[in-house]
Image (cartoon, rainbow, N blue to C red):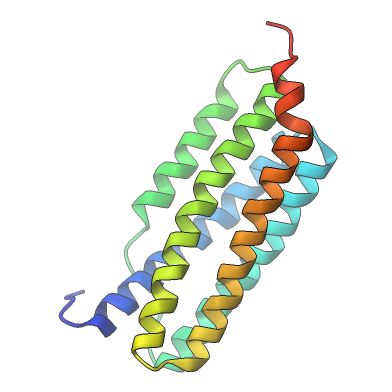
Length: 166
């Protein structure tokens, strides 16, 4: 895809986010299965449902814009997920693994927050008001997930990880 205008860049970035979300749909069940804490597991399950909604919203935006969702694979998300998958293969105490999963999930959330914030701003400039609203809704959910993960880490998981036997 040649990127000659802000609209081209907007579409490119939307397709990148679409790829990222689709990859996350495949990774989250593995994270859920590996999690020890019920509260963390519930947070990941909730985010899995939200991620399905994020994909649906992106599909709706593509339809509004009269374009398809096909683009190149998001290599950044692929790398973030690959890092997380490597962590699951390590010989790591369960208490510490939950802390590692939160750390990896927050890296993913921060990537998504940056991406959705950027495309929302592009949509504003391009007067794509319906897209702005849909993107803002997803951005808000990504931020809420990040805050929830921080709360779980600070209130439970990191303390348990710190006291895990060496």
